[in-house]
Image (tube, rainbow, N blue to C red; front, side, top):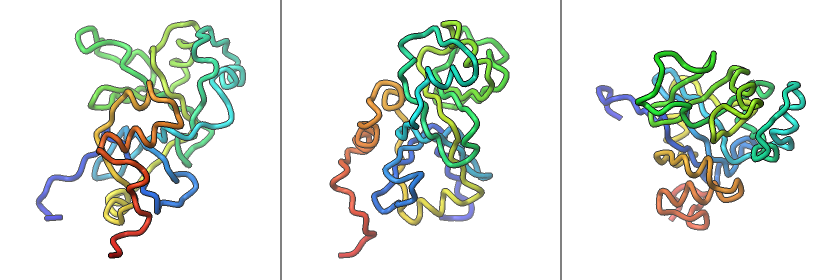
Length: 199
C-alpha cells in the first residue's frame, strides 16, 4: 500500500471469517463494522447467539418487554470485549427528513450507511414500553481492533469484506447469515479453502 493512499475505511461493511480463522470467538463469524478509522475498528458479531434471549435479558435488568415479537430473539455474543455490556444495533429511529439534531438516546453512534448503535439503557427502556427502534440486534460484548491490527489480519487473508446489507442482520435466520454474507460476494462456503495459496 502506498504511503500517500487514503486509509482504508470499512465502516458499514461485513467482515466474513475465512475458514482458516480458528479463533473460537470469530470462527465462521460475520462481523458488522460500526466504526473503522486509522485508530482501529469496532464491530459486532451478528451470527453467534448466546444462550439467553431478549425476554430473559429484560427480566435480568428488571424491565418488562411488552413487544412479544422480540421475546424469543437471541441476545448475541457481539465479541470478546466487555461481554457484560449491552450493545443495540438498530435501524434509525427517524428518517433523515425527520431527524432531530440530537440523538433520541443518551449514547448512540450513527453509522454512515444507515444504522445506529446505542449503548445506553434508555433504548431498552423504550423497547420495554413497546416503542424504540423497530428492528434491533442486541449483543453482549463487542469486537475491537487496535491501530493497524485489522489491516494486518486482512493482509493475512483472515477475513473477506463486503458492503453491509441490513437484510442479513435483520431478516436472515441466524444460521444462514454466514452463507448469506458470502453470497453478497458471489461466493459459497465450500469454495473457500482454509489454506492460503498452495498450488
